[in-house]
Length: 447
Image (cartoon, rainbow, N blue to C red; front, side, top):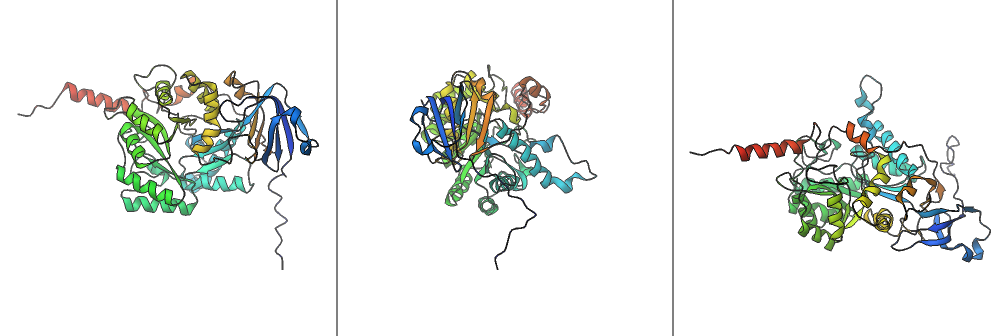
């Protein structure tokens, strides 16, 4: 007997529509590509053809055409460093004991952030830390069509020390056997990437962001086992000590790369940067804003120095932890303020970001065989990144994404209410520097 699906459940996704998109400009996601008066053909959720509109092959001539005129068609943008359940910080269920709903509330919160990012043209997101594997559940819900959203690369709970940065997500571990168990448990739960907290963090109590949380040998054990299982490894790393250790151990991706030295001061290390570049380690551009002794746009000097040393930079904004989803294009503009060329920024946000999250050959490029993850920007983002703030369409896997309204990002408002920002009342780094100064001024005299 053939088992029939329940009639109580409607089809989850609309059928893919084959179509032609045309515009004055097409940016394919690779260096130096800016096609004029061109078209992109989408068939069954994939890119079938890209080229001059006048050269459209006859086999696609009968497909419906959307001509966007003075616009730019480009690959969907990619966020390489997000924490999707951030609404749990500001809202809780209005019930007597909200803890009954922790997992479900985290999951529903992650849906909101993911959809906000997609509404802004971010069609793929690397989730680098989520309690209870809610990002894995979200990925699966999107994949089977329960909800519409971006592609999700999920890490689940970050691996950290007992009481270490991000301990409350559930990935605490204290020895190589425990580390291996965590890696294998993440594999069993369906994580795409293993996230390790290489150093302490500014948003966890007394975890010392300048100190490494594991030895080089422990990092190597984690990375080797993850690679054995076909998993990439990403690390949170503010301190130079931790950055150097994960680089030596063979990490795939470094988040932050803030170069906070053991004395609590920001101090770029060119030798470590050169090794990151030599090994081809992808590095996101997010740094906790406004470090002491760093002038100009947020994090700009560090980002520029990394770029100068040939590090493979990607846009990673710590969405959900430091910045809201609405800050995505603000972060791209900060890269430009740091001195990076617009073409470099757009490559970083598309094809390079895809490679960084394990999506090489899948998305990030407008070319035959790639997923039809496409955005249409009013104007020309290679002339002005503000064009990315005015999108005419977002397409994920060949389907038009029904965008939500997202209020524009206001950096002054965010910094005013972010009490955990460096220099604010919860700044453990400022406490550490003050302590070191007191020690220097009042040394202990041994008689």
